[in-house]
Amino acid sequence: MATEGIEAVFLTTHNWGKAAQFFQALGYELEFATDHNSGRLRNGDGPYVFIAEVPEAQEPQTRIVLKVPDADAFRPDPVVEVVTPFEGTHYGTEEMTVRDPDGRLWSLQAPAKS
Figure (tube, rainbow, N blue to C red):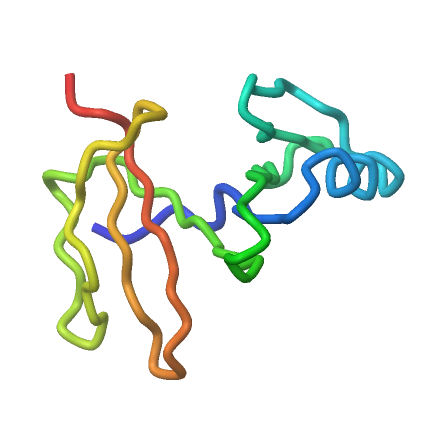
C-alpha cells in the first residue's frame, strides 16, 4: 500500500495569531481554532495547513503530512526509515514519522483505529 499524497502541512510558530493572519492574507480560510493557540486553515480542495503555537525556546518547524488510508495495512518499503511507528494521536488519527535521505522528517497520517 502506498500513500495517497499530501494531506496537510503542519507548522509550529511563536505567534498563532500572526501566522493565521498571514495564511488568511494568502487566501486560506480558518476552518477551526482550538483554545490552545492552534488551528486549521484551508484553501480550496488542496491540503490544509495546521498551525500550532510553541514556546519561544522551541524552533518553529514545518512538517509535510502524507495520507495513508489504513495504518494496519501500510508496510513501508525498506528504503523508508521509520523513526516512530504508527501511534494514536490526541487529535484522533494514527501517525507514523519517517525520515527521508536528507534527514527531513515526514508524517504519515491514517484514520484512527475503530
